Length: 318
Image (tube, rainbow, N blue to C red; front, side, top):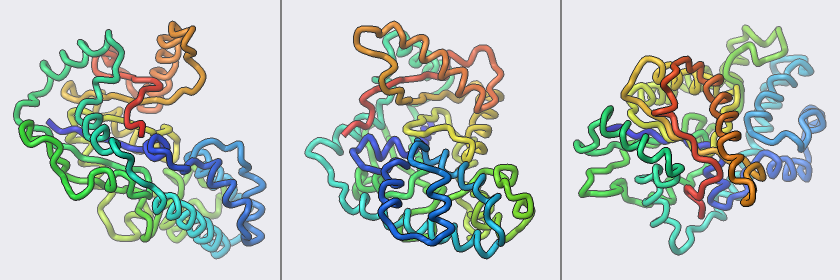
């Protein structure tokens, strides 16, 4: 059985790290920047909530950049500021007394956070579609630059020897701190400067898949292979932004054509389900399911029996 985790910024946030876009924006506002980046700061503003929003805004802001050299310089400056900020957060991250134990339990048992009515459906899917008795291979696609997951794992790559549960790989598809990090868009249509859209030089740092290709690594190809081989995909802390559209479409394609793949998506919807109005859970889940299905291009009518949603859970909470 192949279990694939796709982790976004919400994973770091669950560990108490200040890694959201608004928090980085506050840092950037206190930092002296070039005139072009100062202009971009004013355009994007703090009310942008997500990293994907910032990346989309960067694609839009290209319309105000005159030359490719200016765009290269702007992107390099923004990347360096982001590296500096996130490196501080990564350096300051400390494991709590029980953090690693809870992390190990959570990653092996994400179904414990499903609603009561969903757990039997999940168990039926596992029993009828997958054979977990042969062991479980875990892989991770991280959309983050930080080393939070590696710190939680420590030196061990075995979750459970009796269950043959092994972490096989973790792929930082957007790069890692201390190395080149990728900030950009999914495709050329998200670059609003028309003269930049067909530039190989611009694509080599602003379009994510092209950036990996320009560095002559196989991260994108490896992540595609992991999705295509997965039996269970656990999505945690991802925003489903359009600047990572290729991953949502690829996952949706696998769900449409295969019966031996399921999904658990952990979503954070603050303030939408008060303790005194828990009946709103179904309404919020229905809305989010429609949004995710649309992002993924899911067309099957029987997907609800293998696409599970957990909202505002304690999964991975430090």
